[in-house]
Length: 50
Image (tube, rainbow, N blue to C red; front, side, top):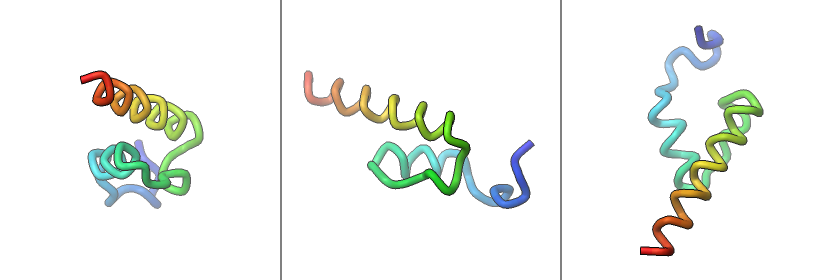
């Protein structure tokens, strides 16, 4: 279960912020932040190939 600090924050909103290059470090734990950055980088690279 999410911490009380994040209960009203939509996970899809956090994902969108990360995909657009925004800072989510204060919104999610460090391992999640790293994973979101990795995914965002992969998506950007895929778009550059297309």
